[in-house]
Image (tube, rainbow, N blue to C red; front, top):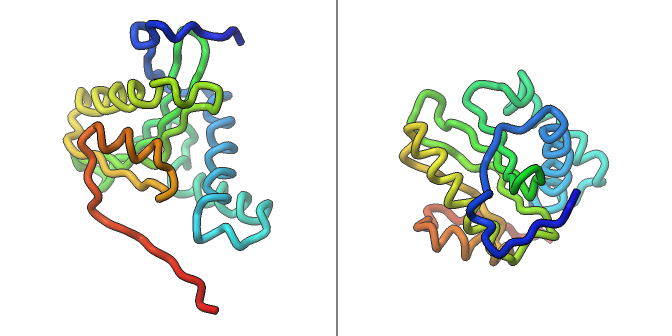
Length: 166
């Protein structure tokens, strides 16, 4: 893939439904990242955690793959190059609310403004489809994501904490 000049990245930035290949790559990457970041899995053997998360993901979010109703698996694109992805679920089903399960900008595109513009595009994408509320979960040490969400008007509504018992 060629590198992209980001001098006017917003003009060609767009969201598309993932292809089968993009979905498989997303599924593997996001489940692996979740296994490393989640307090529920980080003490498990990594390969076991990833396997369990992938099975749970398939049952919960993608029983029909990337075309499962109520799920939005979106590739963030600049021209023909994918720079990241989103995964949203209608939650609760049949409502005007969306939960953002996954938003990732690939490492070589991070800290260049792509995340902010992509999040704005996603907000517009969901609004045009009738969703009027977006909820997300952010890992507390992801300062860049928190900054983007704050700029978009997100507010903290819940806080999850953990402690070792011994």
